[in-house]
Length: 339
Image (tube, rainbow, N blue to C red; front, side, top):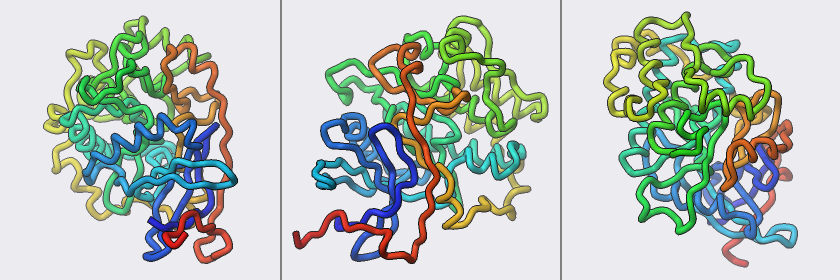
């Protein structure tokens, strides 16, 4: 594919995401790029994403290797979701999404998770920042920490523990296993994020104490009392500490909280409120490793090391971006078929 790279819309220590467009069709998509010699995780993400096709998963567009500034770059091309992330939407709604809309997003995330789980894939990093919004639906994105359940599909080396500490299930925080139930726990934490605009765990002082609390305290995140009885019951099925007792995506899709009758009131409501240009002023994409802040909910761990060790080492930069779509000087040609 011949394409040109636009402005960067997200970056970490070694990966960046840019808006890009085809030279022949003017199709706009997103490109996640890393230096080829450091792109093992991005290549794994490409391998997983290339095998997926679902209306609830961000679409795969292809990959290539380019030479830029005397460096070989591995580029993963994906669907560009114009309206940002679920976390952006929470901020647009002043930190709290109304319950019917929570149900609407939750059902679509679950449909994406059921699709992944039936194909033997665990996402490992479900959270508001990795759910992207379009005009009609929410889609799961960022498979940098995803893993295959089937050992045949795995690499020969041991799979790393991956994800965001604030959203980790107890069995993951203990380093025991990371399978489909871990995604369901993270979904429960994401629902709390939607309902309150805050993190699922309160009064956290540092990542190590957070992981210890999740792993060994016997506690689950507090279920917001502002939610209905049905919503709270749904959350309790997601946030069961015993992974074997946690409901599956298939079971949760049949829960009364997600019945269509409960969602009719949003049929005429705008799905999102952003515009094509304003969304690019926000940090809407996250690399495999994300910016470190005092809020541990936006840190991502994806390493062979323990979560306790890795969470202390994360420290990445973030920035503000602005793209003018009609300014040709802001696009650079990355690859031409004639060359």
